[in-house]
Image (cartoon, rainbow, N blue to C red; front, side):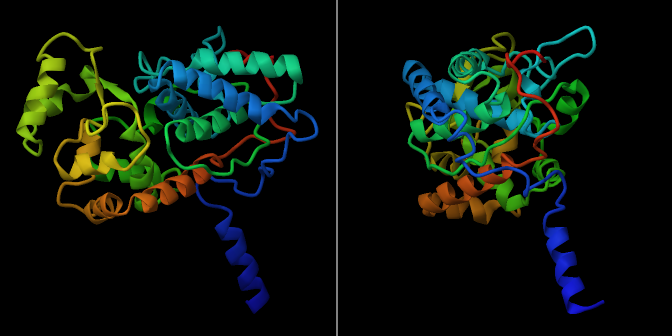
Length: 319
């Protein structure tokens, strides 16, 4: 094989990662001509929603993640059930926990009034996730655009592909690896748990049964989450801050054995990811930088681009 052929092969392989199509999306100026107010409209709506309820920032970020991990970043997570398929909202990782649909619907309604049929729901999700992080004091990243919306959703894929709160470290690494992410990128993305809340049903087993947990922390969580009942009671994923703030304190919690979910604490439990968690404790800016890079990659998971998919008029149903 010639040197040129080897080079072409390496280029091909670099763009054929599992679940990634990095070359298809367009620069962030994609809507400048056809809908110049698109990005400022999304930002204003996100800022208002977060001002009204800071937790909404975490909910919008999570919507984007749960969208991209199932069929790629195609807004499939937003679809209502129909006679032809059961959507993703009733999947175990999503049921009674995904929020923010009303915010996305409101943004879409405004954009349809301003520039009908132009801005996809998938792009709204991607931009809203970035703007939510910024609204809560986190880093900014450039969101490539041009995604289109799927006409289908997959309950099976949502149940199979999304990491569960009871996963061990190797399970989480595998789940992210299946989408083309390294273990290091997984740890960075897990830092999203510096904002938001979890339901008692997802951390009850940890606070009553596990030993790698700070006793005082366990006791305080048991006051929120009784041994039976109260499954929908909420606790902050990051106990180090009194309000949602996008910082590195989640990793400090892990070092102090105050990770709320089992899948959180396993990232710092005498294993392969301990050193990276400690690095993020010591270097907050490193976490912000790594998180932004991983989110750019997240937003490029198998997006639908023209001529595939469609631009939905309403995000919860196909045209």
